[in-house]
Image 1: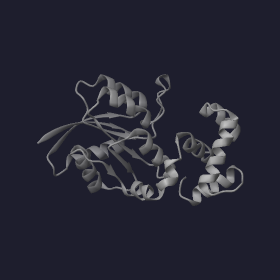
Image 2: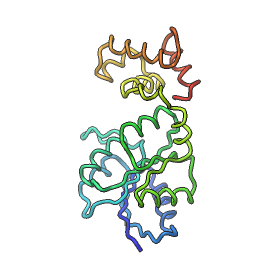
Image 3: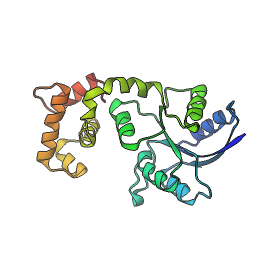
Image 4: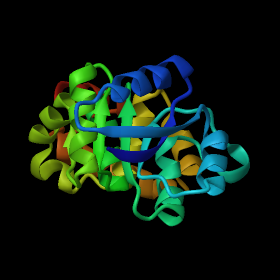
Length: 219
């Protein structure tokens, strides 16, 4: 039997209990020593105060923020985990299924796994856990399907361009983007022109960009 020290971070306690129960009945002989956290602050404290290094960390992407430390979501915890627990394997489990969000997660964080919550049931969670424990990488079906469509276009869809598209899709107005992204208005306008080229739009406004991005499955 092999003990695995796990940190599970989700703002819904029943979800953590569900994960814990499912993995307790794994057929591989893993015994879980689980720590639970329900916010960025609680996770931050658990990461720094752990008596032993974590082997695996399950992170929800959307969490109550810890503003004092500028930790706004699960992804912001990743570099802290890498520093404090360098051998820990990190898996993000998220309700987000939008292509641009998943692309951001994979591009920015270099994770051992990404699972969309609506994709999996108990057997797949156990399978993903086993793959990651053994040093592999696991992506659930929605992530894999989006990866097939990313291709060359998304290789040039850099972090700022993805953030612009994501913020526009949330209803943020162009005039607010410079302050949010710390870019000049001219830089924002230039990047929006690049987005239009990437999406195959000759001309148009923000709604045209969003319409085509939705059509192409990016948001």
